[in-house]
Length: 208
Length: 208
DNA sequence: CGAATGCTTGACGGTACTCAAAGATTGTGG
DNA sequence: CCACAATCTTTGAGTACCGTCAAGCATTCG
Image (tube, rainbow over all chains, first blue to last red; front, side):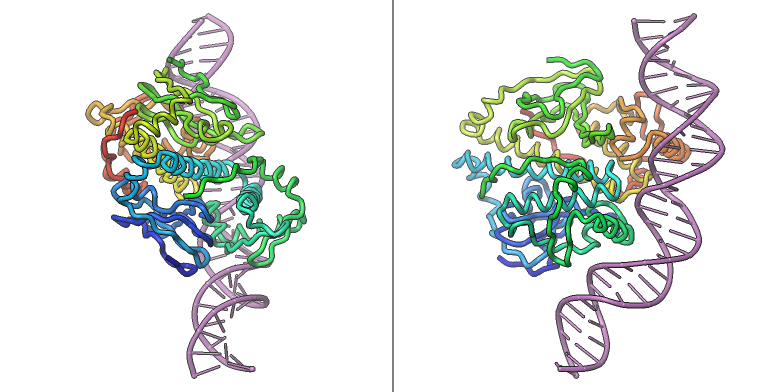
């Protein structure tokens, strides 16, 4: 299955959302308040599961939207139970992926709650850079980064205007270069220090 | 196993943390930045798992501290795999609990990122009130609430002083009463509207 | 009864928000 | 292929929410 950039994969409130694995492309999970304020919870990259929470509860508590054109592999909801029964090692991987996603959300919560805007932007760039690297989707020190400043704002709980000013200020430090849809890392060490973010490179992830 | 109020259950960075279920009492998960800023990720109530993330990765990415005296049931880490292999329904429950915990963190991220201080305090009180109710730990419209204002501040990404002023302002609205360690709900409907938080009461949770 | 912890309040400052408008870029259809 | 729309980026002026600092009060505990 393929969803075009900007398309809705799961709508907040869907009663019976499907279950997917990301094969290629980017997406993000988000929640909205009734007056339109939006918070991006995390970004989804190849290998991540989508819609698992909806399979466990009565409905989706969050929306999922494609950031780029994205290829998904649909899994039948009814197959989950068979998987737990017949393939414990796969069931374990599902739990691993769920726990891993939570650890990302944890870090984002720390960022939004306690990091300054400057530290937050640094942390987000570093996190995505590392994730792309561990997926071997980096070309040297360059990775795709298909985010608009509005996405960054909604991920960090900031306003668009402030993200722009903060990004600008960060770039003047020369730790990285950001041309539209690519991020080129120049001084990752310094950026990590600024962000106070030193997550170890991830173990190779299980693939479902 | 019992840990006294204020005691450390898991230290951030522990290499080989144990695995527990909460039998009674409160705890919380948190992360800290190197200069001491702290973010509480979520609160743990009876039935919740502790330390599962640490079992999946190389070390704990967050700390866990007892809020009250707390009774824990320790599970051997080595037993996890056996559980997945021999008791798929229990394995499924583990995943359910993990996904449920993530949905709480998701909501907290929305709060910290996009709700105002007033909305955030309202949301936190409502969330804990509902959780206690679904655990049948409420006495009518009263529940224990063993949080200090510093805990609320660290959960919402606010300063202690501002939490105090905000709480005070909220109480003047008369939607609830807060005496030290108890919360008495007076107008839950209005508080939900204020918080824009309408999570349905939880299904009875699986117990591990 | 003193120490420690937690709560309350005020003055002041700053980070980040709102509002507004003008470029820049991209995409699209005539 | 150009023109127009839509989206995204950039910038500034003014504001406000929330943070910091500081001090006094209340409560609990040993």
